[in-house]
Each structure stands twice: as structure tokens, then as C-alpha cells.
Image 1: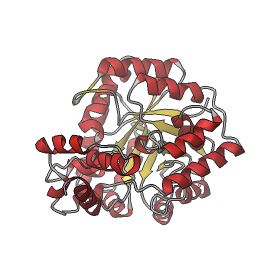
Image 2: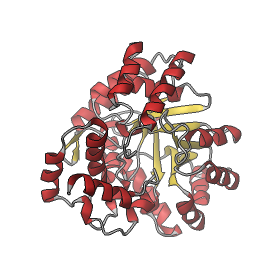
Image 3: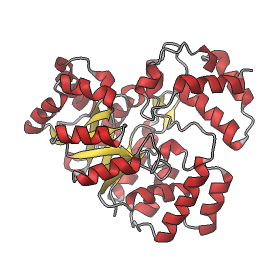
Image 4: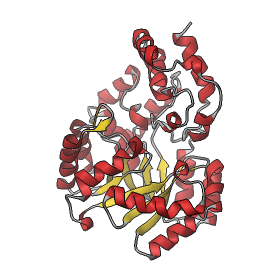
Length: 362
């Protein structure tokens, strides 16, 4: 069995609320198959992810039977004095007395300084000494150079969570390969996030699907997740499962994990080259950009429609028109740049919203 974790950012939903009945069944199925790692954050689903885990997992299973990871997000503290009360509120929301892994969340060069100035790493070490954190970790979205700087300056970091998938492996912005190599250099186990890139490696262009289909080797998700799991030093691969069907598919190939063959790596290389030619916006729909938008533009949803029309030639103009009758249009962006400061993918969101407006509003 390979390290496989339940990412709790994209849970089953009924409207704006977590579908607790469905999530409980998923938790039980996951645990039944021997998988025990759950990953959450206060910023996931506006705090509802933590609360759902309390109701569906931590209140129902012995504490030693699962591993729980939570995060200190940049938007959740402004000064050093905020960190401990926030941390204690997370323990309460999750219904636990300690976290197995506590991550400095979505570190980038632009946010790292704040964590240092607020002594976040020092406080995490104090909490570890008190038994409230078992392992100090970080999630990261920047260049390999910045990652190496942080690991040099913060030896307390035991594990690094990286965006790592076959599409981003040699991407000059995400730098999955280079960041992975830095982790290997510093002997830091890697937790993989976004192995299917927010679903983009499942919803593939037909040319890419045809290449995988010729192999008859499993679902598109299986190629994406097994690819990540086949690298040495990968401690855990997270999957943001939002229904039982996705979970059953993931369990089918992760319970009796078989590493990639040479031929499978070659197949993925071919698919990667196809994806590079697509005029798609590489948004993973994390929604970090939405919370601070003064115009309340649902940026990921608009980008999704852009990709549907540009990549798949789907006629989604009517969906865009209806949605923007009650929600902000792409053209209503006031160019404040708050979204770009929060984007883990470092997307030029203001420029991309102009492209969306040109496609749908003219």
C-alpha cells in the first residue's frame, strides 16, 4: 500500500454545505481500506472542512487510528499574537488535542517574510514541544530557489507539500521537478498536492484521452496519481475526492500500488506535450483568489468556461450569460491585483479576465 491521503478541500456538497452523510460514508470506506491520512485547512470551504472532519471523522474514530494535517494560512493571522489563539481554534474545530502534521500554508517568497516576522516557525516548534504538533511541515508554491532558501533557514521543517503532477513537472512557473529535487537534496519527504491539477488531468482533450485509451491501463486519474507515487521520496499523495465514485477508483489502484513502468512514463510524456499546446488557463480551482475580490468575481468558474470553449469547443455562452446576470462579469474586474497575490499558480488573473471578457462579452 502506498501513502495516499484524503484532501478535504473539495468535499461532497449540497449547495453551500458539506454533504455530511456522503462524506461520512467516504471516511468509513477510506478507513476500511487502511488509509488514514486526512488534510484540511481553515480556508477550505470557509471553515466547513474542519467542522465536517470533526463530525464525520474525529468524533467517530479513536485518535490514534488516523493522521490529521492542518495549516496556518497567511490570511488567518496578522501578528504573532494571533497565531496561538488561531491554532487552538483549529484544534477545537477539528475536535482533536493535537495535529499529526501542521503546515505553514502556501508559502511563497511574498508571504514567507510575514511568517518569519511573526515567529510562526518558532511558535510551531513550541507547540511541538508541548505535544500539540507531531510534525512541522510546509506547503509551497514558488521557485526552487525560494524553497532552498526556506529549507536552509528553517531546519525545523520536516516535510514539504508540493504541487507535483505530470503536467507541471517541467513547467517553468510551477517548477515541480526542480522543487522536488531540492526536497531530495535536503532529505525532506514530499507530500503531493494537486496530482490531477484540480481535475484538469481527468478532463483531458480527446487527443490525450486517445493515447491513454490505447493502453487500456485504467482511469485518467490513475495515471496522474500513480505517476506521482512512482517517484522516490514521495511520502503521501493527496486526492481531493468529492464523491464515492472517485474514492473507489483511487482505492482500486492505490491499495495494491504498482509503480509506473518505463512505457507508462513514455505515455505520460506524450500526453504532456499535447497539453502544452492547449490554449488553456491552468487554474486548479482552489478559490483562494475569490475571498478577497472586492467585486466578488467567481474567477475559477469563469476560467473553467473559457477552457471549455477554447480547448473543447463547447458552446457555453448561454451558461456564462445566465451566470453573469446574478454574478459579476469578467469585465467588472477593477485590476486591484488582490487575486494575483493569493494565486498559488502565479496566474496573471487580471490579464486572463480580459481574455474571458473578450471571448464571452463582445
